[in-house]
Image (cartoon, rainbow, N blue to C red; front, side):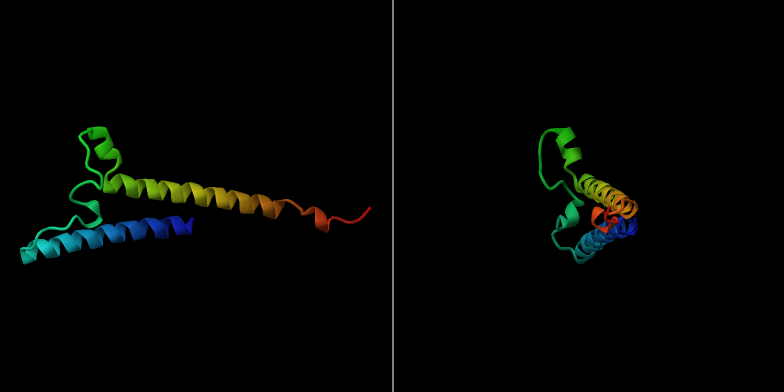
Length: 93
């Protein structure tokens, strides 16, 4: 479960970096970049539902969810394999 927290904090950190980058450009009077898709979605569409589902924030949430599911499945498989006795170690009858 630790890697879920590390991954989530990494996503938050990259969002902070994007916000700082946008702030730096704004303070310098430069054209604002779309850092980490914080200003507008990666894919622009007229459909409001698609715009929400494909925003930078939604994509980050999807990444955390996928990481969580994969981590839980991996932990379940490892726990199952530790409790199951391998057949090649069973005594010969």
